[in-house]
Image 1 (cartoon, helix red, strand yellow):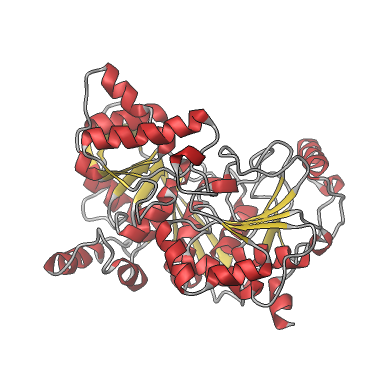
Image 2 (tube, rainbow, N blue to C red):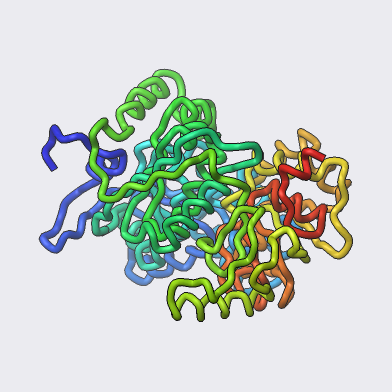
Length: 472
């Protein structure tokens, strides 16, 4: 690329962090921010065996989230001894090497992809990595953020650099005005339903268009979080006034003259006019409705007014067989209206949808209503600050009065490895990001949807168009 050629947001950040390139196409990148959670605690063992220590501990931040109990805050409350050891090991290793950890009892503890943005650790222009695929979340602030494997976590700890092959770029523009109760979750599910779960494979996605610019920061975080479910390497939204307003005054954000200088730099990041992308997709935002998944992939999503599709209408034998397997697992019959599907559980939480805006939206639905008989409903805040803010606003009392359980921060039922799982055959209305077989427990049937839609399902006992519910 010529130095004077128009560049994308992705290209600008990639170039700023490039250290060197090899003839085989691999690029060594300098990592601006390395985030750790309890699942990556064992990477320190690799360093210890090789006699190494973290290269830049001041650029590394950690929080336990995957394996913590959402029933309490004490390490002793983690029932599985293997998971308890992971949390304890993260605490020991970060203390040994002078790495800032937001541990259990810390006022900023929470899910790593909630903690990063809300503390101001995630900033425009940074290259951010974490040993978790949903690191793409942080791209909502104009960062290049992606997940890495356990071996790569150890490499970044030791060198603060990472070898990567440069991905291609894709721009997904969502134009128009979103309708009532249509959220970032509905937008990303509509995108994945359109392009498929592998539609962005090998690409970094930049989300653009008037509908994206109209999203709050929380909505953008949800959008970028699920870029991985579209096959993308990362997701990004160019920084703008919404970004700056969100970051200003946060604990790790620049202050005073440093803030002014940072904003001036950040204003240079958005893609230049005429910058070329390897692929482009456009959606009409005004046509997007509240969405619900019916199968075992986020691409199996439909507007709430739809019906379970018939495998016989699929274009080829492979897809027909796949759909039949999914419907058998999900216990659904072709032609069933989504609004006729009863649920057993409702889960409002995860790094996708557990921020204060998400809880406000769910509480607005729960207010004055009761969880339907036979339904178990949980609300799990994404972090301690989210929990404090929700309680200051009285949202926890709204949820409790409606029959929802009000839990402690953590990943909880999103991934089903911490004891928070559904029983075999239970149908879950979930605000998380993945719905593959067994994701929320062996035999659990997961449907993805927004917080307001999950609350609507909880109080009606079935998938419900939240627009109609709120209209009375």
